[in-house]
Length: 124
Image 1 (spheres, rainbow, N blue to C red):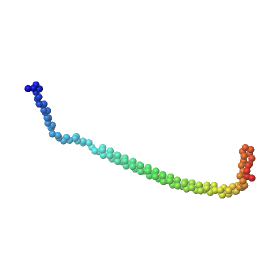
Image 2 (image 1 turned 45 degrees about the vertical axis):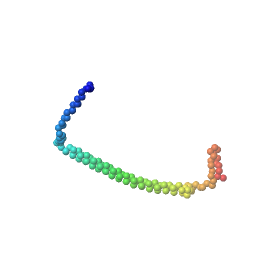
Image 3 (image 1 turned 180 degrees about the horizontal axis):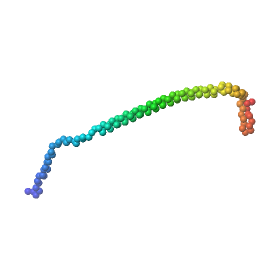
Image 4 (image 1 turned 180 degrees about the vertical axis):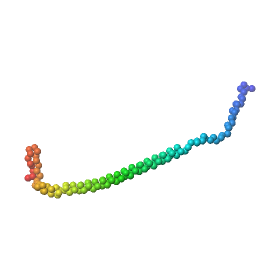
């Protein structure tokens, strides 16, 4: 025989029975829906008034832009007319005609003034 200790079976855990599950209903809210609906209506009205204000500002800005565009078109036409008039005045024939009216005559040669001694050189 052996001197081995006596083994005893481990005690089985006791199984506790749970009571069957039941549906638990939440607490009833007896509050009014009027504040929520009032808030929703206020948000909706504010959004509509904001959209109306933005639309009004955009229409006014569009009108101002149209007026400025017409003004730019007029000024562009005026600048073009002044440039063409300037080209006519700057033309060599026009400069020569005005010089003759002022009593100027064309030079026969090019002459220079020497600054060192003040003598006129060239044109001979």
